[in-house]
Length: 474
Ligand SMILES: Cc1cc2nc3c(=O)[nH]c(=O)nc-3n(C[C@H](O)[C@H](O)[C@H](O)COP(=O)(O)OP(=O)(O)OC[C@H]3O[C@@H](n4cnc5c(N)ncnc54)[C@H](O)[C@@H]3O)c2cc1C
Figure (tube, protein in one colour):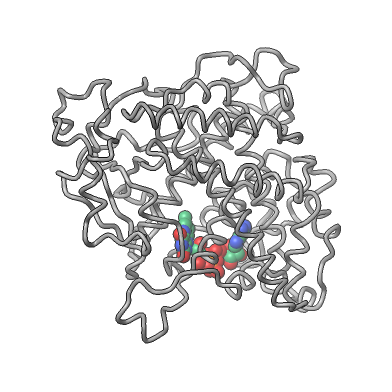
C-alpha cells in the first residue's frame, strides 16, 4: 500500500465523491444541501428535543456479558466509568415501583423533576465531566410496560435489552459522548469484528488491520451491502468526530492533577489524524461522507415513521412537558418532510427469494453488531455505542421490515405515507434511541462545520483537502 500516493495528492471535491457516486445510486443528495439543512433547520430542533425528559433517559443493560470473547480490557480511565445512584434516587421509587404489583400504566413519578433531584444533587456528579451516571438504577426490572412488547424479535435489527433484569436507566445529559481514552487492542477488536466479520466485505482485505474495508472495493458489492457498510462506517465516523470535538485538552498539564475536570474542547490535530487522506490511506473523506449517508438514512426512517411518531404520547407524567415534546416532534417532522431529496429505500431488497435471503442476512449481521457492543471495554463508550446501534437498528427496521410501508406503492419520498400496512409500534427505548442517534449524527455534521471553520482560520492549506472532499454529492 503506497502511502505516498495520498500524501501529496489533495483530492478535489468532485474526485472524492465520484468514488461513491455513479453506479451506487444510493442517493443523489448533495453534502452542502445537508450541511445547510442540518445546521440551520434540524440541529437546533433535535438538540432541544433530546433534552426533554422523554428522550433524556435511556434504558440499557450495560452488564451483559460479551458473547464473543472474554472482556479483558476494562478501561482504567476515569472518563469511562459509571457511577450508579442509590435506590432512593430512582424516580418513582417512593411510590412503590420497586414492587412487581405496581407495574401498571402510570409511570408518572418516574420522570418527575422531584424524583430526579437526588441524583442531580449528588456531590460526585459534575455535569462538566460527564461521568457515566446511572440515574435510575433500581427500577430496571419494574419498567412500566406502557406499550405492548414487540414479540416478533426476528423483525428487530437489534438485541433490545430494555426488558433485562440488569437494564438500568441512564441520564444521557449527565453522560455526554466525548473523549474517553478508550483505544488500543480492545477498541480495535470491536471495530475489526464489526467490519471484517459482520459487515459484508467486498473481498478479503490483504491489509491485516488497516483499513478494514477499502472504499474502492465497494463498487463490486450490491447496493444493500454497500448501504450496510456505509451506515456502520458513518456511525463510526460520528463516534470519532465526537471524541475529537470533546477532547480532554489538559490531560498532560499540571492543572489536571489538581483539577480532574480538565479542559475539554476540539482537538484539530486529532481530527486531522483521523480523517485526513494522507493519514487514512485516502479513506478519511469517504468516512466523512458515510456520516452524511447514515444521516440521510435515519432521517428517511424518521420521515417514514413520522405519521406514527406524531401520534405517540411521549408520556412522562408531566403534562406540560409532554405536550411540548409532542409539539416539538411535530415541528421537527414537518421540517424533515420538507427535505427535498430523501434516501430512497424502495430499490433495496427487490429481487425475489434471493433478496429475501439477503434481507435476513442483513438483519442478522446488524443484530450481531448490536451484540458486539456488549464487548466494548469502556462503559461510557458502550452506552453510546449501544444507543447509536439501537437507533440505527430501529431506523433499518422502519425502512426494511415492510411493516412500515405505505399501502400505496407510489407513496414515498416527497409524498410520505399517511397510513401503515399494520399498526406497528415502537418501544420507548427504540424511539429514545432513534431520536438520540439522529441527534448524534446531526451534532457530528455541525461539529464538522466547526472543524472546517477552525482549519480555515489556521490558513494551513495542507490540512484542507479532506474537508474539501466532504463537499459535493454523497
Ligand atoms: C462502540 C465504540 C464506541 C466508542 N466510543 C468512544 C467514545 O465515546 N469516546 C472515545 O474517546 N472513544 C470511543 N471509542 C474508541 C474510538 O472509536 C477508537 O476506537 C479509538 O479512539 C482508537 O482509534 P483508532 O485511531 O485506533 O481508530 P478506530 O476508530 O479504532 O478505527 C479502527 C480502524 O477502522 C478504520 N476506520 C476508522 N474510521 C472508520 C470509519 N468511519 N469507517 C470505516 N472504517 C474506519 C481504520 O482502518 C481504523 O484504523 C469507541 C469505540 C467503540 C468500538
